[in-house]
Image 1 (cartoon, helix red, strand yellow):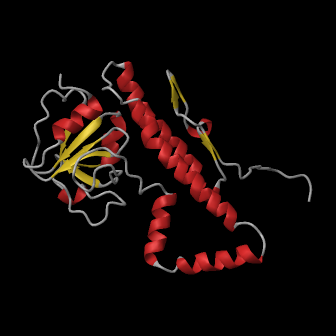
Image 2 (image 1 turned 90 degrees about the vertical axis):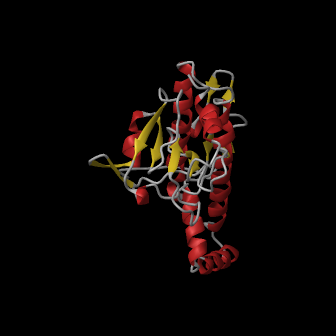
Image 3 (image 1 turned 180 degrees about the vertical axis):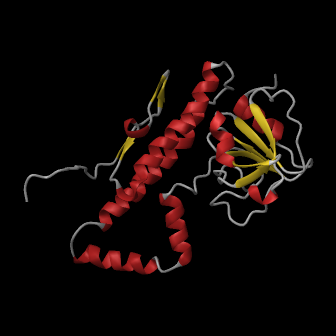
Length: 244
């Protein structure tokens, strides 16, 4: 073998920064964590670091960041990276040669014949089962909102198209909560397609909420089914600051 056209080198080192923030300095992506590239998880991990941090930095620059918002970057993203390092170490162990590892691989492969095991591993490696502690009682809070088809007015759109503005959105069906004082930071979107506001991957068989507050990074900060469901004011204040 000689004259290669392309050479890629990687190792199985697993390293994790002790902190993601030191004063005004933040680390993200490969500056915060490196690991064996099993499953291609590094790209998702780094991009989600950036998206999680980006809208919080923007709020701080504009003087609208509530207390603790920038610190939530580390508290939310650190455990996600730690889990990726953990599962890539396991995949590294499964790739080693030898009869003992061969036997282990055979056993793991047999477990993958089970639907529940496949779903759990797929959700973990694709990072679709991440749940942040965003507060709120609804079981869909903290999960990523799915990129569902929506009908807004006379136009068809998708959830993630609405998020391209970099602002938070309040998706509503039939019930439009009062968010007076936060309209400058949150866009209210009334959709006529209730099926469009589906539960996020990982939250299980949860009924579709009537209203969903989605952070700029695509994660559900609050959800409710009617005026009796409280917590919206608290969620708005926690993530976007006090009412104007």
